[in-house]
Amino acid sequence: MELSLRERIRAGDPEAFAELFDAHARAVYGHAARLTGDAGAAEDVVSLTFLEAWRLREKLRPEGAAADPGLPEGEGLRPWLYGIATNVLRNTRRAARRHSAALARLPERPADRDTVPDFADALVGRLEDAERLAAARTALGRLPGPEREVFALCVWSGLSYEAAGEALGVPASTVRSRLARARQRLRRLSEAELAARGGRRDTVGSTQERNR
Amino acid sequence: MNPEEREEPALLLPSPGEPVLTDDRHDLLKTHLLRELTVTRRATPRRRFALIAVPVATAVVAAAVVVGVGRTGTPATDPRAVDLLNRIAAVAATRKAVAVRDDQYLYVRTQGFMKFSDKDVRTLRESSWTAVDGKRPGLRRITVLNGPPFRPRDPFSSYSKGTHDMRLSPDPNVTTFRELEALPTDPDALLRKIYDDTKDDRGQALERIGDMLAEAGLLPELDAALYRAAAKVPGVSVVANAKDYAGRSGIGLAFRGREEREVWVFDKESLAYLGSGTEALLDVGVADKAGETPEAPDD
Image (tube, rainbow over all chains, first blue to last red; front, side):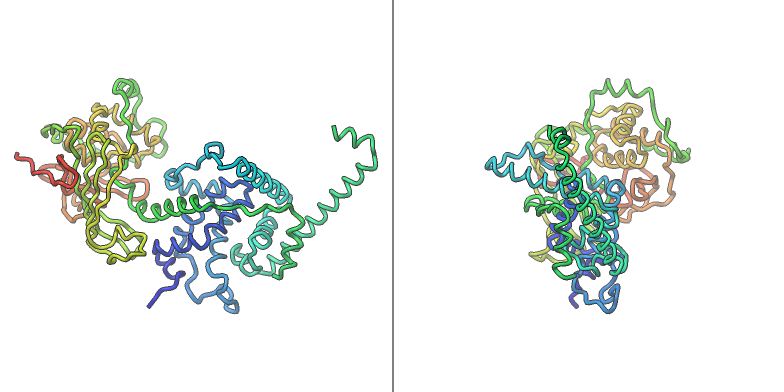
């Protein structure tokens, strides 16, 4: 009988982990980069997530035992992996300690200044990407932790409420309400900022003061 | 979740863009992961220890401060283990040193295993030839005794059942025979150096010593110093009947390594090192060419 990918992962088949990596490493990287705002740190999160997945492979629920029997297995292994990534992101230092020997064997990342881009445009593009990422991360930082996670999972990584709930170990309804709260908070914040900017514009003198 | 539910909140924050893991980084991280999943489940591959020789004089100065100071929760020292290690050292010191030329290869043959999963543990015999000066490529020949047959898509096809040769590129992280020769043969100085390299971790220091025992068999003074150094590390105990990974029994010395309990096994009569509970030492010698089995010594 052909074992499913899920069963092969549970059995600790390294080839299954190779497939899992091919299928999801890029997405986990994107999620980690958006939540940390740091492309370099995101690579470590990818390594740690898959090392943790290997360590915890036997805890992956077996085939057929869906968290909610009414749900299809559609999202497959994604929620499980995002759940592990979430824990790694919550406490990267602890995960790094656990896998310190493995991380030490990780080939060093070339620093940006060591790589010569073909065109100056490429470098500029990369810096712009890095700035945009950092700006989004700063803005995301205005949300409390649980809302931040839900926002990144559902809005930026495109997980369904159910999948995000499975990743975070909470019901889908909790995901929905956290996202609603996040949305309200962000709306209030941006309205407040608009108002603040408008207010300054009225008082000409102080605006000049600030613009210097 | 419908698209608007996603789009509206997305507009409330600046777009983070699409951070991309490039293909080369992806492949590099993947290779690293797969190596970690397999090779490192066993202790660090035996000959990949990074001990860089220091001038003996420096090491001797540092030797005054030794062992056990400031380490919390020091395990008890078993006087029988200390006695046995010192006897093993005394016998080791009387063995004949082997003359080795720079153009030759160090030959080590072992029997060990590679754990791919709890259900897939492959026994393998490994012969390796490492350039004495570390400057020329070596050879690693493994024979996997039990394991799946060769399949082209298998990322671990080099561990399928059968014999596989791998070229070993010169690697600065692998200690060369010449570097081993340059290590201090004063047990205190040697131990200080090993503790420095292992951040004073006892289990790791003993593992480090264990890593060197095979090759050190050709260097009687270093060999004796390694056992005398081990005698100064607390936490080693005697196992009356121990078995190496090939099933040969002898007297054992056990300690807690970084991950699991380790046992070194010695012949009860000759006190020769047989190997460990996870890797048996079958042969060690010097060969003129990589791939060539050295002749048995004629004594």
